[in-house]
Length: 367
Length: 107
Ligand SMILES: Cc1cc2nc3c(=O)[nH]c(=O)nc-3n(C[C@H](O)[C@H](O)[C@H](O)COP(=O)(O)OP(=O)(O)OC[C@H]3O[C@@H](n4cnc5c(N)ncnc54)[C@H](O)[C@@H]3O)c2cc1C
Ligand code: FES
Image (tube, rainbow over the protein chains, first blue to last red):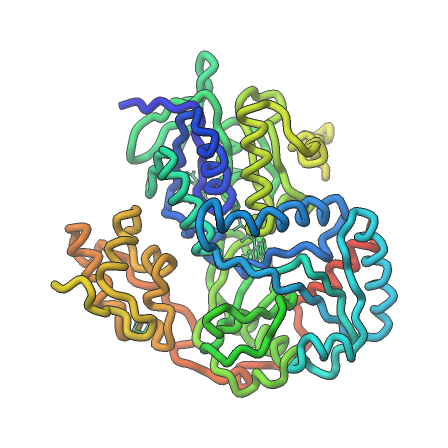
């Protein structure tokens, strides 16, 4: 059985589903999305979902994040209510000596148009009265916020389906071959899909997809664990780097990094450290109950920056893999659609090309 | 059965909502959980786990053992944050602020 498409997107996380939706808006190409699981079984189902800009560096990366955040308000009209809230974002520091670093960051971000304020303790406590008085200050920007990641991916896929995109779930891609200008994508459950153009959006597994094409896509797996409290009265106003309160009152806490491969367990030591951080930020949380805990594996390109664009030397094959995929998804969908459909993009993607990773004489990738 | 019957009491999710999720391709408990929030309440699916899996197995027409149960994670029951916290020096939890300004000094 063979299935013919103009474009096949592999991966239906926030990145793949946004690309599929944006492609489908043009209504000119036959598009399919294949996923070895279901929507949200990957990293997009276990994320903090800050739409976060203000302290992303280098500044061109911050700038990119800002353009993406600016697309969020219109998503509601286009795909439905993804519960996006531009709350403003705060990254506290606890040592007065850090103010100097904060001011340098603000200065640097200003050059690309990101408005970062450096708050005094009083200004900070005015914004977040329950924050610990031990905080010395914070960086802050109006541009940051958060979104409901479940609704976001659900609505991207729903809108894409409405525009005629086919989805094939629980169907791992096992082999990709190029034959007479077409890609033959072999799957475990539904035979071979044929496509003129393919987009690799396999999140943390994108390296494996690359290997099917004999391409090295250098990404790391970095686990993050999050604690969730019982629903509490609203007491946090903004999105705080490490702590946010969801619409239903639950508080999501955590910012941990461990390189343990694909392992998605939660571990007591990190839960304890995370609870410790929660109390450093919000002493009032001491009496709150933790009801659950989750863990996800971030996909982080070796140099920390997005890999986005055409695969060098491979016509009609594209890759989109990045950390902060939630923040960047509206922009990635937009740019990848321009690239796939029009072959040129409104923003220069050259810094994000896979070609930046060069090989040493021994064949090792150099970052 | 009446489709408006609530199967997850904590999050007030009814059979109709579970079936809507299944219609889009969900297969297992956690797939349905992420779309409907069933199982995310204070009891962490202890009360609804079995019932929801039965609804799924009937809809998909497979035996209940083919429907993966919710992933079990700590804490087994609610625990106060202060009881969980340590003030040991954190090694895996990091400060977003520190991380971002280290980027400034790098560039
Ligand atoms: C704890 C944590 C907190 C985070 N916080 C934030 C945040 O606050 N803000 C933010 O913007 N980002 C955050 N992130 C990062 C963000 O969640 C990810 O960047 C994003 O979810 C990645 O999306 P994706 O679509 O690339 O990957 P995924 O959601 O993992 O999707 C990839 C899909 O590809 C499929 N796939 C892979 N291989 C194959 C194959 N061979 N065949 C078929 N299908 C395949 C998988 O099944 C999967 O569904 C966080 C991540 C973690 C873990
Ligand atoms: S009844 Fe479903 S989570 Fe408690």
